[in-house]
Image (cartoon, rainbow, N blue to C red; front, side, top):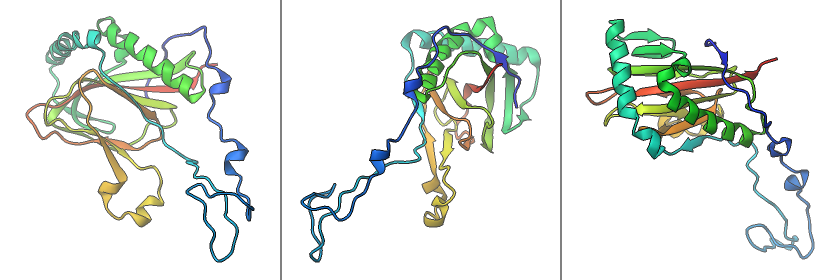
Length: 242
């Protein structure tokens, strides 16, 4: 697990009534029913009464996508230049870091004063997602890092459990840079969908955009097909601090 810090403290806890619930009435199926219509139209088969029913998505995987902020985007070129200067000062060759292959990494990016604009932007986004999940964003473990990918750099398939949420903020995404690929978390899906492509969803993000997803969701990053790799700030939102 990555090094974590208490990032911020909010005086406004998430509303408890925002917790996702499925009412028992959603699952009610009564058969037979007299004089009732089907959810897809009234029907009687072989003299049987119509049956009432409803389709319910029991186990959806929620992913949150945020468009670039125009004000923040004006700073991305400056931030990218700054990262490349830091990279030159370190005089490091691309390395392997956990799931990453061929990249330079800056740990604890949210503690850098020069990256405060991104940090403040992510605070707002993460608080919104925590509220949507019915959890508090107050006093949680937090870790972040920036990967500057080489032209051949990539990430192998991995997840970020036991954290709660994970996300990526894109600083630079040149044409041909590898996409983030999200894998279908349902193992039984592969029994009916033999094609690997049917189990994976690519995320074609633009600079300044953010994606947040459950930390347990498996994902990877494609190798770049162009002359430049992507630059992204990734982060984990972990457990509440006692």
